[in-house]
View 1 (cartoon, rainbow, N blue to C red):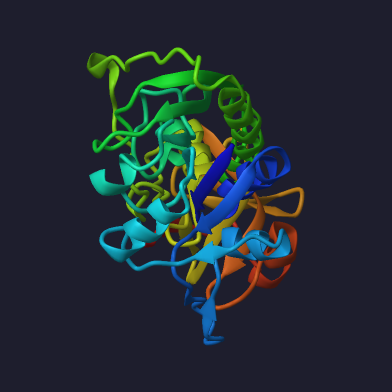
View 2: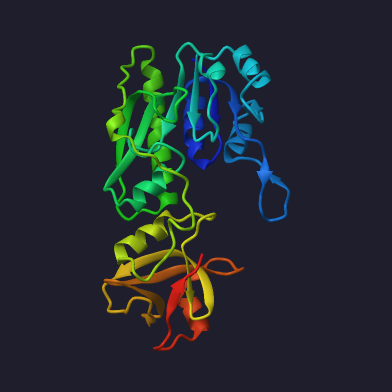
Length: 304
């Protein structure tokens, strides 16, 4: 089957690799190179890097309308497969392949439509999420699905859960493509639909009046662009990894437990295992605590 693949971040790479091993990938469409944020010029997407290693042609249009749509049409794909592309597909692209445009979405639709399904599932404290293989429409993640694969969340961090879902999604996508055109599509129930907006700093802000469970979820859902941060005494840092403890620590108080800093919340504390001080790289919590010289009166506060 002739496939055009569209994707951008690391989440999409397993699907691309699975398709390249089982089908004829005639082109890979990904977002344009972007500034790395470290003053080192433009950085290609994870999908572009993977596609070039696989020897696949890469397209990076600024828009999918007009000339880009016509170029995709000229490739005569049987199906277009999408995984975290980051751009809505216009009608002129959706209508190109005879088997439609099929998307790997990281939730059990219709819950968590939108840009941040993994982070929103963690923040809402649901027990499981999953992957939906859906046929795309002009609406945002509104199309019917052919297969759903559930995945338990547990205490996973967003980055870990995304890669688990990426592998599950790659397998599910190839299963659906192998069953075309005899796939049965299930319409989504609009009454159960929820929207997963991009995560902001406010969504993951650490506040003393949170429960430990809420604070732990915010740390696990945080991203580089929306980090979970705190100011201990006069030292600002990002909490990268943590674990709950029932140790009695007053809300807004901070102490050291087994060498690690602990932030106090309403019903316990968070032990900080990995932190990122302002302007520095990641370091272990105990190494940070040794240099911080925390005393019994140390307090912490929210910082955005």
